[in-house]
Image (cartoon, rainbow, N blue to C red; front, side, top):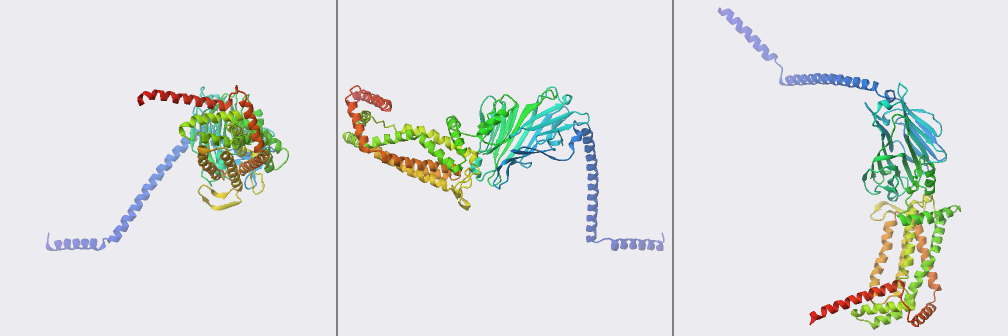
Length: 629
């Protein structure tokens, strides 16, 4: 290679190197290119992933289409959501073709707080689904659009029908002049789609129970998921806390119950394997409880026997529910009146066979409910007046004999003579014809009536919405005096009827304590002072307990306390202590002249007990005597 050739190669190389150096991109340009390359790479990957997802979705869609094309009710998976209404003069029920079940219940004769008809629930609050387990697929009523047939004002059939004409029907019949709906589920030609062992249908029912009344706490206290056990009584889940219960015994019905209204599902072929749940809702949410029920009931895929049920959307009126029992399509005694809670057995019987009939009779006179409660109070007080008078006279006898008792206390001042003093005191009472316990038994007789009314008044739907004096609704608290912020123990209002009830209670306590103090001496009188403070504490505690209770209940207790004060005043004015003492002295002389006179009743039992204790003490003294030597 000559010198010129070598020089040429060097110049070419220098040009190439220089060009490469001066034409190379800067760092910013390199970074921009890298960024662009990354974006393009991501876009390519995303496009690939989207293509794969589309292909997978197409495969799923093809598989679903293939499955739907063989589904029992494939054509009913799509459709138009329509509302069908059944109604009579009492109730308006709205059904939806999507799911085929009731989605709203409206009671025409009852008003809510806004003055509109009471709506127990709508599609946002409640849902019911029927589920059947097939060989190849499960049928869930909520997934299908039903076709309404046989539609009238009171009858409706929601039908699923396949291409072969095989059907599943939900039949509804609203019974005239009632709140009851007959409900049957029947199949036609579906036997081959289900296993021969299939004998049951699953029901999923849930509802958020709406707050219908003014007082959340009071209404919630009387709202509960209630159920009736077959051939037994009713039971319910907790009203105040979350509770879930699995019930293995068959059930006749399950009720989602508010204070004054209930939604009841009745199975005439029994509910089995029930799982029930109740959860309290938050105050100011507009709801009281969330109820859930999972149930099984009879189902015949062959269609020979229909599944028979009934639905009830009704006020909790005792006599109405009693009458509704006669509408049962089976021979079961549904005992739906148990939805009106009347207390434990003793108090329930007092309410059922006495209080309710007097209340209904007074209500039939066309008087305001305030006057009805006043007359009810007077009648009850007249009924128990003989026992009240006997209780007062017993205290009066103890009062006029107080000087005699004081003499015995002076005769036996030593504590070791307490047994002898007590024996002579019992002998004294017996000779004068006085029983120290005579004032207690009459009060015990009155107490069951007092408690029975405590259970009756809050559950009397007749008081709902009825106004009297300053109370706008006797079934809720009266809150003429109220404030914005809720205070501890008292809330956001002051119930005037509750305050009056507590004041009359304090006066009655003062009268009772005064009567007892006038008849007691010595140690008993000292002990009574402590009891007096405890007794005065009760009305104060009642105020905080009853301030949220219904004004009707507080009004009744106020009337009861006021009439008790008047009765005590009347008895005190008509009782002559001198004549009473003279009568007791006559008893004393007659009994003293009769050496065979024996104590009877409580006095005799007390004397026998005291003698037994005295004998035990003497025996213990004899055993301990040698040890003292």
